[in-house]
Length: 303
Image (cartoon, rainbow, N blue to C red; front, side):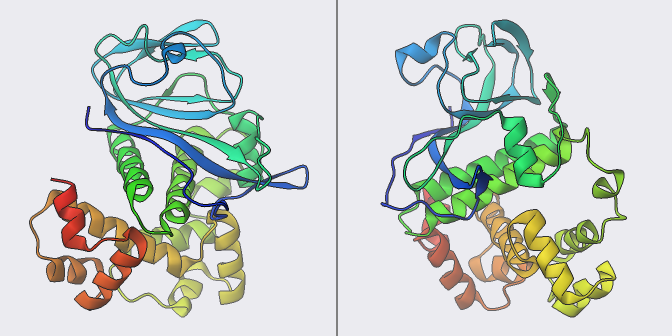
């Protein structure tokens, strides 16, 4: 197993980078545990058989094959299998695991007063997107989508293990990226076609940022590409993705820098130039602000 983390609340308040509104109450995620490449049973003994609780699980199988139980039914698990469990749904990922390996994020949605949300994940996504839809029972992600999802899960674990007081905030932002992926790959029924194609100006702007995040992008550039005013673009983008277009670009730069630190031997100034920071000292300041450690310390901790 590569990494397993059981989290603890580190502050009295809950960050509000990701908010689900339901019945006039604001629910925010609180992480319970997470794992990357889990290959053995870990946790409380009662979770080693079919059980329920008031938690959401997002589980992605990455290697080998096995089975899992959900709502009393046996399902096959193979690389790319994505399993989403809502509060109150019976499940068991252990007793029939065989040699399968998976990565997962487990969290609850809680108000500042401690009230726990228990509605199905489909309804959470409907609230998140403002669009009714359904999630298929047996989900399969492509190899590329699976790799992207695992990278985001690793980022969530990095944030949760960081000493920075902002780390919970950034972990919530990363969880929003997980929800975006599920919406894009698994939550298509009921969505208007324009919302899934390049005809949507907000998606055009996001795609441009995805392809040019290392370049200098202005609000005027994005308004021209999306054929709408700057004000409308920024409001619609933030409503759709919970972050402004330029903050989204900064997130992409930071995530790219993390990957290069983890998987290459490039020097910090080379990474800063490659992802678009321009100034290595600014890169160091931004990295320490988000992670609570320097890029060099982060790289050493991942070795």
